[in-house]
Length: 209
Image 1 (cartoon, one colour):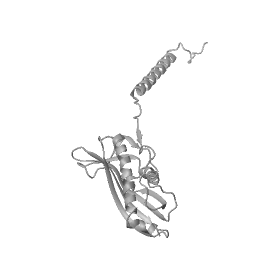
Image 2: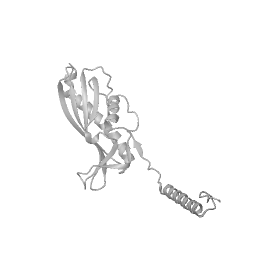
Image 3: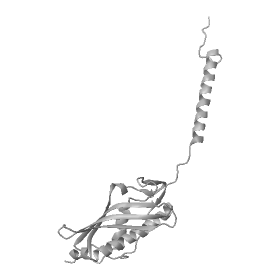
């Protein structure tokens, strides 16, 4: 007497199982191919900075400064390239495929250290807090890079000697991220000029004693 071999390749059950397995493999391969076909390359994100090093002493401080530190308000502490349109004055938007290479404060501080030629030889400490670092677009489609900063000057004892606010802007040749970065560089230069002019007045007298 022979016993039926349930695992024989010639048995009907085995043949049906092989066919089902083959269909499963083909279905898996089809799904994998379809999935690969639907993959899209990741969008390229362009990073912008302020265009390289600024000239040392480009707008030299009229009084020696011990330190200069730049911080930023939360709204401008990230790397998104922000813009605002006058038609939607309460909406802050960012360019999807463009961002700053570093947070604004991290770019502005070394720029001002070079522009104002801060060498640590003075008695006063200057603190700047960025309140705005944005590209603004008006109703006619014209744009400007705007920087607003609050200044705080501390004397040798760490006492507030003076406080001041600066708001500077530079027009864009064309409303686009690259032109915005170039205009922002010019705005930082203008910010340095404003700081130097402020220190040349009454504010800087406390640093000369």
